[in-house]
Image (cartoon, rainbow, N blue to C red; front, side):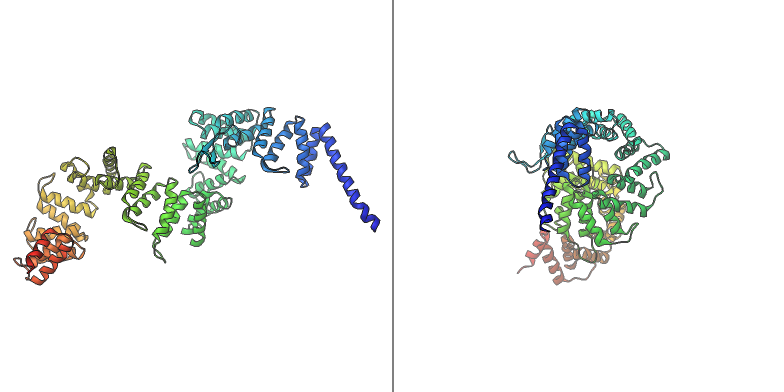
Length: 562
């Protein structure tokens, strides 16, 4: 027992030494055999020994070994990871015409990790910071991808198609890209099928074209490409190139979401929130939306903001909503930027800040959000927030464009600015036209259009029609309209006098804090009108109006003082 126990380790050690000696001889004399031996060692989980064989074969000039040594350095397999050494060895193999090395080197240049790639300063970094984002070297990438593509690499062909589609403008050639994608797809490359499907989407002229596009996306999805799985979900949901199937689409979103595709996570989370195509689970849905938002998906961040802003079992949490809207807005989500601007404008969940409101509304407006353009234009023309001289011209242009497209809010604001000469040259004739259009639906426009008609601004005076429009706004509960209609009833302008009805309207408006209506109630109760006198009540109304800054009411109060 002692004999065997003492000699077994020695035998094992001797076998290991002989095995390593064999590895050395094989790698020196027969590099190709060393590659095969290294492959077996990798399969056996002996990455360190495999790397030694590969390195010796690579130093002997074997291109396959050079490529695999480069991959070992990049992957940290059998050797400490080293991006620099990895790229260097892959480049040596590519220079010898190794096809996989050629397209891999192209991909490394696109990823910005090759030594020739420059670094782009990331936000918040300084001259002494190493925190810099890699910048793709598309010129070098195209060179190596083209070599691989011309040597018959399906991966290289797909990569070249990508460069010709998404590279710098000077490199783009969509027709050539489509041909390379097609060759790659025909060779069975999933990336090529996906790229070819996307290229077909740019020139769809029939249902047959849609079906061909969707089929290539499906092939890429079946190969497990998460972007293709997500896109197939979108096509399935909308019935493009296939029968619409909400349930199948949602399952595709789920599959891609589980693979980490953040757009799919957003769609899966949205489906869970609404219960569309899957059982509703708002808690799980919000969890997926948060995951996508934290990964940088602006749509998901905006949806989480909506969750906190909505009224439900719990009251809205506008402060938390603003945090998520800001995250989305900073990623370029224009609706979130507009919402955040409105929060700052009205102090929703935060302090009122017109300057910050203008900044976010401007971001949304310049991103093409029409609602933001209308709100910002109104602010600029009324002198709210910071503005440049050219902003007023832009504001009027935004309002005119939106109004011409049927936006009644824009039509109202444009009409009011033209009527009052606010930020623009007064033009009452143009104003009355825009106000008339907006008055079809907007209560505020009905009031102002009625006033313009009654006063004859931009049109022949028509007090009767003006009173009718103001009455419509008053019936909707607008305090200014109630007070204006009551005044017309007191004076008999545009219709018969009716002091009792006027008194009721003034009381409605006063109950909403309208200082002018309070003053009018004081005057009517002070005597001289077809309503009972009540001097004590009159004084109370004068005092209430005076507290709100009404100058006439202040004078009446001072006269009543002993």
